[in-house]
Image 1 (cartoon, helix red, strand yellow):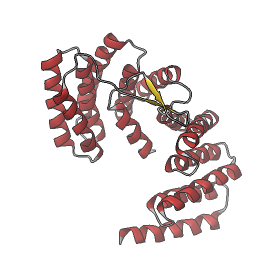
Image 2 (cartoon, helix red, strand yellow):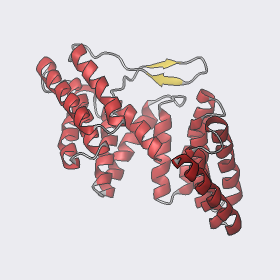
Image 3 (spheres, rainbow, N blue to C red):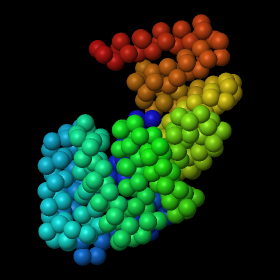
Image 4 (cartoon, rainbow, N blue to C red):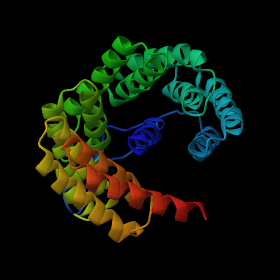
Length: 289
């Protein structure tokens, strides 16, 4: 789940263009293009520079660069240009993702949303992305009702706006599935994970990390439905793929083994669960060396 969230946030921290390019295998990837009369190349370079710092958790340096980018955008384009909104959203994301002052995120996001809605309309992907970051803000503040409201606005816009073959729908399907699981709606979560899996297998092949993550999610939904045998099949396939890609004693394999052990315990297979926990302990001990 953490990997899914950070993948989604990495995408959403950057502006989308609603034009798309089609790859050779039929998958559609969203492209970004320069906005007319934008804030300029200096702003664009600073904006791009802050993202890897966010991913590494370097909040102070990321914030310094993002604020400078915002200053350039306002000076070059005026206070109501979409590039300003993009900088505002980036600063808010830094607060939310790197342990900053979450209370400062909301007014930044509200201002960004207002700019995007005036520039592109409330149904644009720009607006949708901002609703997603707002949903993360309210989730951190434990305001679950507002978090859910903004999240489903985001998901609804994406599901209605993008081609069904869009690779960009993967994060939406996975995030939506996770939300549905948290609500106990396992059948609809399963449907979302399966849609994501179909795109992943077509775009990334049948033996990728992304497919392994999808299969793990499918197993989680099936376990919630008490379809333990089907859950086991999917989870073992996830482990098999990950072992091939990362090695049998990798951290990712250990994560899925813990999930499988939990599945075994839920279905009363306690001895098999204990064997897996022992294997995980061995992997973790080797990882610490």
